[in-house]
Amino acid sequence: MPPRAQPMRIRLSDLLKWVAPTALAVGLAGAYPTWLLGGGPALCAQACAGAIVLAAVMVSSLLVAFSAWAGPSQVTTTFIASGLLRVAMCVGPGAVLLWKDLLPPTPLLVWLAVFYLALFVAEGAWVARALREHTAHPSLDELMRPRAMTRMDIE
Image 1 (cartoon, rainbow, N blue to C red):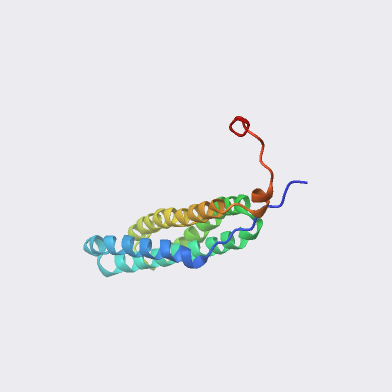
Image 2: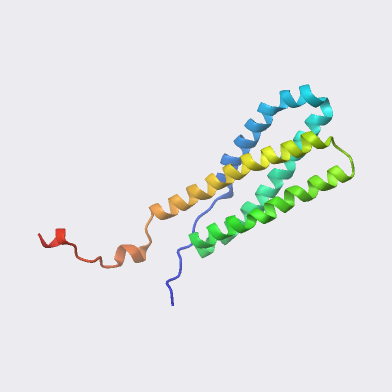
């Protein structure tokens, strides 16, 4: 039977430190050009796209954080698998908004893609940092395990 993986500590508050500034920076950087190209409706489409993607990232991150009890292998698997959920949670509401013709389609689609890519990178950085912190602290089993003798020990 393989050894049980050490649970990880993943905090959603750390995620917000990555996602919130990224979303704010991307949104602010694109607000003026979006307003110039499409006015108020385009800005509304940008804000809706940001809210949709942010909600999708938070749901995905909840799944990743919940899987932390099973160790780093499960965290990485959950992060990759939750990508399908993230995409579905972005495409679904976006398609409804397009179908109902509530917002201009071009800014909505562009901003869904931009926010998705930016927040995917931020969420990936959060997971990578959590994995790095987890491996920086060896488990008690690793500390107590006798290590093999090397040539340096003999000399």
